[in-house]
Length: 496
Image 1 (cartoon, rainbow, N blue to C red):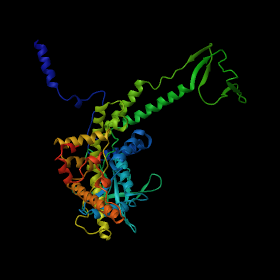
Image 2 (image 1 turned 90 degrees about the vertical axis):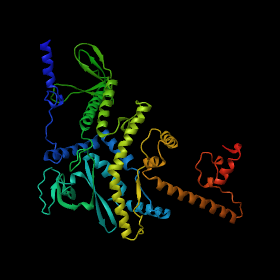
Image 3 (image 1 turned 180 degrees about the vertical axis):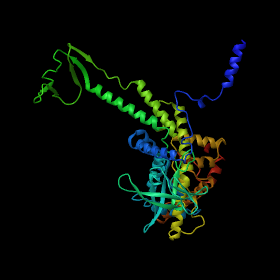
């Protein structure tokens, strides 16, 4: 017993983190690449950016991810002015939309922003929009990651203005003051590097390690994505072979009959080639040694194979922060798990919208508005730059259910109107209240104008507020004014 006790105590002294000890199944981590700005890390970043581009170009997983991002993160962006003047708001919104329609290079600002923010950024880890002015006004140039800094990874510049250079960025203390941008040459060459002031650029980066440059969102998913499509391709090749071979025939001649095949005897060669006389399709193969048939049956894809592919897809989805049910399908998940997956996807989309897209979009809105003010195309109003970007609704499996849930939360005090408005539109409650007031005034004016027009034409003034803007499923049962609402309480039979 003493020997056993002493042995147990000795083992207890060894207790620690097994993952920190060497083992035979996994390479032990070291400090190589730990510094995100090191030469080794920069080389890996560039390679991952190439792999991410390949994933989007050649795999449905990569293409599906960036398409979903474009749908929900930047596909419905619009600027909502809030100057306090309804007429000015409408004018500003229309003028900005007109300006942004031609702000890209042979495209709109919306397209340029969407590609940089939801394609180039996740693929390569960072990207950029650069302000450029020509005779027609401001434009935004799309700058991909490979054009920022040396595309081969090394760096040998020492600025003489007190700044220091690192991975395509010029720094002064903790502040980026410029970027080195290359032009693409012939083939894979890059030439004519140019130092561009940081004020002329809108730099996009969204990674979790905090280096000077970003890392492809697909970095942790690439192994699963590539393996998945290699396995699928090999299986499809097997299915193709099995679908074309119906059976294997064995006979003494080792050859098909002349009714099935034509024979061709090459010149000066003691062999005979058998050529199918029918169109491509299921075929019979012939062998020697005995008369027998071996019928082949298709065994792919099996249920276990399909489940394996689904598991690999789910692992890749985890790596990019989007649930499998959102990127692929929720048909096997059930109600509650499906809604949870949509909620997780909505949280990630909200993070991208608010932490990545909105700060850059705010810069675009501010610069564009002030440029138009400077050109005397917008008034110099103190509130001219006030407003907010709208992104559209978040993904949902049941929009009516979510809206009903918000209404109940407000009624029971779990949420305020401000909470619901901010979550669904990005605007504040005072803005919505002021807009509601403006709309109510406009509708009442429209009712009076319409009735005045009827009277001038010799008809009775019978147009009501419900004719102009009904907000209820059954407008006849709703009060049309405060007086009518008060009078209806005097008679219980009139209460609907």
